[in-house]
Image (cartoon, rainbow, N blue to C red; front, side, top):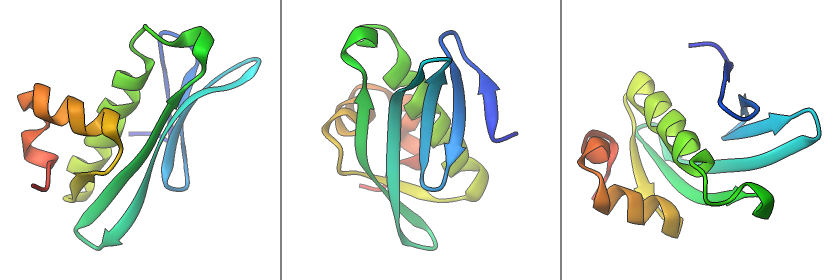
Length: 99
């Protein structure tokens, strides 16, 4: 997959250890991770601009992070509370969740 993809609102870009949604006005959301080792990432931060909260921007960012983890063959430790809640609620992330 390319480093950007068209999104419902803005474009998702891969920027170092983050995925960021940008519009013409600038960034409106991000999810970041820190590599712990070659097989593990720690998802440590998710943010969506208050104006865009309540939609599904954070979920789309998490989906993109999970997709990247699958492509790279790594597991994710959910340090960020949003990621932790989503991992517990949605079995679709079981394959990338490091318990």
